[in-house]
Length: 84
Image (tube, rainbow, N blue to C red):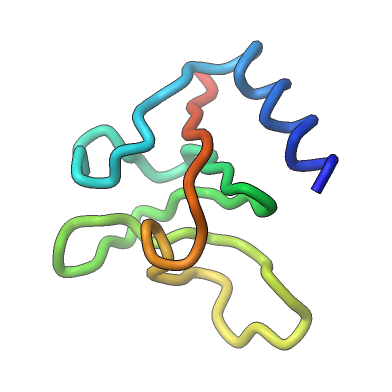
């Protein structure tokens, strides 16, 4: 968990900070970084039927798919960043 906090601080100082509102779908692009309370992922270019992007992440060693439709469902979003 401390690693995610450290990464959040680094991203907030070194990248472009973006919305955490998943309803603003046009502001979410493939390659963006999304930080959850205790997890981190990369925004995919694949989207669900509501145009909300999938997240590429690794949650556990038994995970079957690493690109999943979890944005706004499974974890609380605490940061959304883009490197320029």
